[in-house]
Amino acid sequence: MQLYNTLSAEERAIMIDDAGQQRLTLSFYAYAKIQDPQKFRNDLFIAWNALDALGRIYVATEGINAQMSVPAENFEAFRETLEAYDFMKGIRLNVAVEHDDHSFLKLTIKVRHKIVADGLNDDTFDVTDIGVHLKAKEFNEILDDPNTIVVDFRNHYESEVGHFKGAITPDVETFRESLPIINEQLKDHKDDKNLVMYCTGGIRCEKASAYFKHQGFKNVYQLEGGIINYAKQLKEEGLESKFIGKNFVFDNRLGERITDDIISQCHQCGKPCDNHTNCENDGCHLLFIQCDECKAVMENCCSTECLEIIHMPLVDQVRLRTGKQVGNKVFRKGKSENLKFKHSGELPETALATAQKPADIRQKIKVKKVLLGKAEHYYVKAQVGQFTVENHELNVGDKILISGPTTGDQELVLGRIIVNGAETQSAKIGDKVTFEVPFRIRLSDKLYKIVN
Image (cartoon, rainbow, N blue to C red):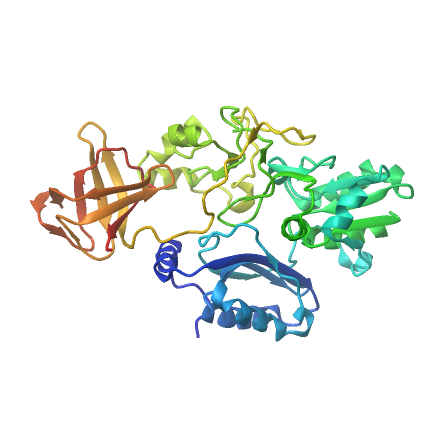
């Protein structure tokens, strides 16, 4: 009985491309009493793995929080797996406005103490006494009320690229930080103001609204289904968007465009930009905004220090990371003195530029390919790249693809190759192969054989 992933992200990406099926990106949550979260987790994994459903899911005794990618043809079967549980019958699925076949490349279901780290003691207040849910049209109307205070319960790196006009956007890195800050900031308006809150998909507001009602706020409202559902209703009903910019999402897309307005800047050069990236240095992984030009020059790195590190031998990179704390204590969310154009707290509502819409957000099968191996080194003067063959066989005359976050997709036809130091016609698994490459390659690059 398979209860965990057996494929790498790279292998899964190839399988998705080869299948050529449209996938839907969606999210949902439900608060409920779950007696045995581990059994619940295992049952979900078995059911969803059979449907090729991928994603990041947290389960706890208090419920479930899920962000997922599901083949469109399996959508109804997936819904049936939810309907099997009484507390998820008729559950709202927040289906993304923009889909990407590679939004998730693994099925990860984790048992946690809570489905959202809120830092609250649920025994001290009624978590079911929540605020009034507002649909998009109602939300727009209440925002026009001068007695309304609207609060963004997301983190600084989310609100920086997009938020509702006039919203309070706390300069915080975690949800739990925002609760006491907002409570103190609005303590004099518990009776006379509408406290209106929103987040990505609604789950943070579900708990926050109950907390603030317990704190004495009389008029508490929340955006039903969060920004994701708001964007869907805008499209369906032709409503005006009072949200400006991009909605940060927690999958490989890192963002879903709501309006064409770009309200943030590249953290390195200041150019209008709202595309997030993670620093290429595995010992950093800082989340920050980076334009295409800086991405090329800095090779996906946040600083010159990290740029130097990624060019070190892998053994030296590992040595530098040894003994450091892991998780969120290392992988920071966009806070660094190196980021000269980072903004948070009070944010602008004026567009700096207009985004160009892509021709088609869905992934298309452009080339059929199989993964061969990975880059090991690039000899700049000789313009020669070295790769390790990890899968299949490589031959002179093969059409290959070298692909990476900075390199992009580069196609070549193999001429002369050197295998383990000697010229030959083919390379097999385990071989070190070198050949001329008329562009710089990086350690993050992968080597593929084009087979169509």
